[in-house]
Amino acid sequence: MIELHRLTRTFVVGESEVRALREVSLTIGDGEYLAIMGPSGSGKSTLLHLLGLLDRPTSGSFRLDGVEVATLDERERARIRREKVGFVFQFFHLVPRMTAAQNVELPLVLAGVPPADRRRRVAAALEGFGIADRADHRPDELSGGQRQRVAIARATLHRPTLLLADEPTGNLDRATGAEVIEILEHLCDAGLTLIVVTHDPEVGARARRILRLVDGSVVEDRLTGTA
Amino acid sequence: MSLLDTLRFTLATVAGQRLRAGLTLLAMAIGVAAVVVLTALGEGARRFVIDEFAALGTHLLIVLPGRSETVGAAPPLLAETPRDLTLDDAMALLQSPHVSRIAPISLGAAEVSFGARSREVTIVGTTAEFLEIRHLHVGLGQFLPPGRSRVASSVAVIGPKVREEMFGMASPLGEWIRVGDRRFRVVGTLGSGGESIGLDLDELVLIPVVAAQALFDTSSLFRVMVEADSRLAVPLARADIRRILRQRHDGEDDVTVIAQDAVLSTFDRVVRALTLGVAGIAGISLFVAGILVMNVMLISVAERTAEIGLLKALGSPPRQILSLFLWEAALLSLAGAVVGLAIGQLGVAILSRIYPALPFRTPTWAIGSAIGTALVCGLAFGVLPARRAAQLDPVIALAGR
Image 1 (cartoon, rainbow over the protein chains, first blue to last red):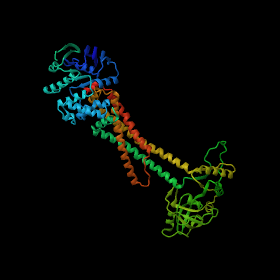
Image 2: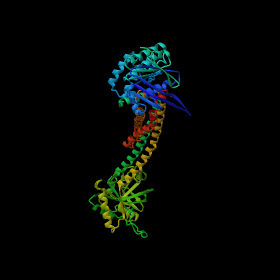
Image 3: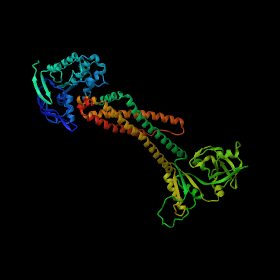
């Protein structure tokens, strides 16, 4: 459960202040499928970064599962990211010197999960996302779709409750993008809260709820009626 | 994150930037190798000197006439001449149960001639015990006759160089040589003992001490060499020497007793200080290598900004990122130190080949401190880049800016 109350994020650029997000209040329930849409510079990514605890609000409150997280120290915020949040990025952010399997394994390595357990879970994840045969390939040997599958496997291996996707199809062709969205929706069906930032109306239309931002303010928040 | 995983992660990172890591490692290695080789040189010199002294006997005491200590005497009345150290004084030292042998020495220079050849030579007047105390060897014939310390017999033992110059290939034994205004019969020659601290043994003529005193017209001795029973007996023997001579000199403490140990420890200190100094200079190169480590790490942080952002997004706390980068610095430095140690040992082995006489060996403290300095430098200079990585804003880092 995500509860935002008058969340504001201001950036100082040189002399002037830029208000990227203006007093956004919002509640997102567990298992929701939400698309954040809006033109460039509307504050979509800023909101996503705040939701993923990568950034701190300038003012306002952010409660995640009942805990006020805006004011937690960096160590605690890192722990919450490690346990509850998964990220999928437009540019995949795979470590180039690591194989697909090693990339997927990375969050478990950082979390100190024992090797035997890690190997089992990584193998299962690669199998589940249809990339088991690419396990020993490095990112530059994979197609865009394969890379995004590796990234999704990495984002979900530690069983987060919240999956944040920043333009997940932005760097993919239509068909591959559709496949990736299907995978994400599948995860949402299994109980994960899915929040997708996109400016592709087709991707947005598939979500069950659309949040539209303009100049840092919510101008539209509606259910799409999609099952 | 387990230590093994941390190491594996760091190793993969270092392997990913081979050339840069290799060059840094090389700089570190050169620093460590320099410390290893230079301290081995210093230590070799030190051990060489000590071995030389040990050849003289470590339980040797030397008694000199005159006093070297300042005693609180009234200022104007210092013009007191030291009492002579006489042959009787020397013989009296044998009363001490801790003294096993003594060799009185009377020293001077005189013209030595045989036939038409003559040259100025250092003359040592002493007794048969000198041979044992100084660990010398007889070449031909025999040494000064034992048990006749007070007899001015006209016999002489000559050094190998004197022999060569005076007699060429002919045997000197039984020949009469002229020393100053007296004649001596050559009874033996010294084996070529090379140089022993202070005296070139090759160019000596040894005659009985009484004969030398007569020759130089003095009753005083240059010094007395005393051999204590054992190394442990050295302080006891020294006390006895002082006591006996004080009694004989009307209660005056007017001799100086030098233990071989004192000379040895002075040399030891001097050479050790030199070695330390040289090691310090070599240590500067380790410092420079540390700066190189920092450079490589800063570039590494700059290049891997996006990766650091990813690690943060995956829930890596600042401390973990700090430790990952510190491990990288430590690994670079340690690998450099190990390679440097190998190069250094190789250098020492080559030096030992070239100068087999010097006992080269790198002291353990030097190895330890070289590796320690390498690690500390690497880590200290790794802290800044590592902190920079740990404090990166994840949003900015993910954007790769």
